Image (cartoon, rainbow, N blue to C red; front, side, top):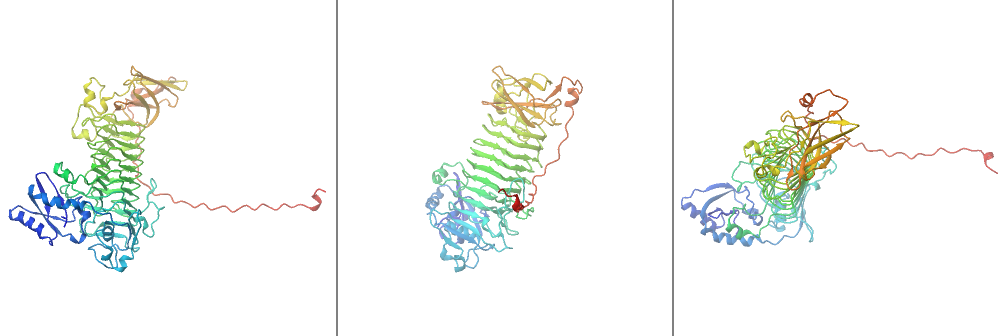
Length: 637
């Protein structure tokens, strides 16, 4: 028999009591109790990513006893569980869930989601079902994928769980909420990104505390067309609780940096190619705020090639999306991520661990309590492109995007109404060659781009940066400043004059830099002399002496301009001080008066809006030509 949950540590092992049917493990526990070690009670449904895929749900017990045993005493149990990792893949099935009930597995007329997952995992057999339940199961031929579909009664489409669901432990499973009768793929509640309204919801029952909604521990799993919300609990050690609507992880406990652990379980791999799409996380189908908010949305604890696309992610105590140990090749695209971080980690997307080749593209990230994207000491590079990022920093003042690490790309985003700067690059840990180009900024409380300098490591420097940097005065600045202290472009004048429709700009930057010229529509009161980089209007290059110049015809007298410099070896600079375009024919309005004026802020944006009803186009009736009347006499003879 396999232990329910086992975790390992180099110095000691945590053992959980097995089913009372097994006297061997009962004797182990009684042995530690006889040594007067203090046992501690933990609910079995508090999931540790482990060997739950090998368990029969009938062997779960309500409480289990935990005690510490000597390391040498643990060798035999680990040898016993190792063969359980290699399970034959169950034959593919299509299972139709016809009941929103939950509870112990039993033969009746109701085939529940819990029973469907156990069937797919192979821990429940067809022989254990009633004839009515068997009619809901169809055997498929390989290489077909196992499917969980839904046919719930019309007014009973919310599944209220009474305990943690078993993890999805079979590769290739599709959990498809779009199969519920009445699901409309063309009906969206939002106009910005069309995401269909789900009908099937999964949430804990009232007064029941469950940490995870769906847990995925194998490859090629697809979750779509569901609403998952309300999964939270008392905060304990991460090893015991990884609370999220959807958790993606390997089957074993988190890595304790133990050589013994790695040698025993190196064969177990993180899930690959998991897809979460067209799902509402943290929010019920009626769009109301749930009485119990989920802790996190999607937690990629350990997985590769995960895709999170076209989901609506809202109302979480912590981040909407979070990574931990590994999330290589992660794709986050076309999601609506609104109103997260209300009582914990405030950032909409929080990336940690190994995140190489991650892409965050074409999302709407709005109204979250901290940053839209926050990178905390990651390994690997991220591409952040074409996102609408607005009205974040709702509870805590933070940068819209905070970067740590090297070689990240922030390109083509719209970043507005941020209670902090636009993009901040940390000084420590070392963060270099970060490219920040072609973005549009507005209504910021700080610089559009802020490179933290002199190894500043105060709390505020990891939230809102440290403001404009002085010119690099020593090679040491490259070592203690974000993006190698690439110099900000410096204008050769504080105002430039237009003549015959042309204005010529001149300045200095690091030799070999690409200099982007931006129109500035607002001057920030938080950083006098600087304004948000509203729109890129031109580019040029600095020569080997660091000089650049360009003539523009697409600006008008009174326009404010700024510039940034990007060097391939260093990254992108902070913005230059704003300058103004003047007309030779208009000597009035001095630069001092104009620069002291702050342009009015636009109204705070609304995150989402209702789609406009589509009016069907009525086909036009064919036009019948009028008959031509003529007389017989008019015909030619």
